[in-house]
Length: 176
Image (cartoon, rainbow, N blue to C red; front, side, top):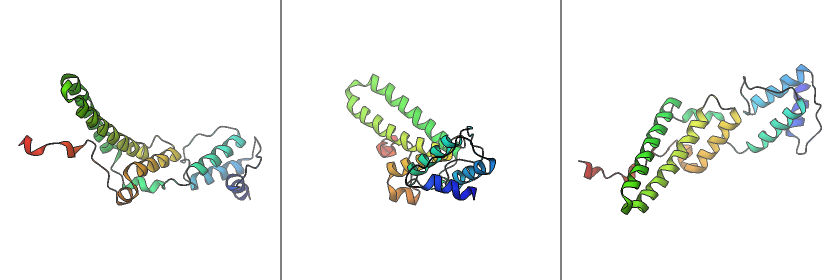
């Protein structure tokens, strides 16, 4: 019965009043519903206001309804590799910024390259947020949605992420 009541409170198309205090059975039902909807993890902290928490679950369920499931994060590279890729991106951006200051004649081209590098950083930051064990589940799902929006649905579904820096700009033939 508590689970049914909590589901009605959360899934109802309009907001129903909920009590500020509730029994342990209702709290457990709310936590289980939030877990099943992939909004919170098992160790997520809760405040002692049942009404506020019902509102939070309800709001986040609605906002996350078009977000990919958490399982999509399993297709991403491991978090440690993502951190290394973000570090590479950061080092490359610093190089570009320094080079732009020295090579004023190439300012526009380097600014464009910096812009591309920043867009790639955004992709990899979303991947980092989606795989972070420190983030609550709803934030991880939002990061997956943002990642899908950035790379496109087809690339997202295929698991094709762009490189962490604009490799297409590198003149490999000149480096030989």
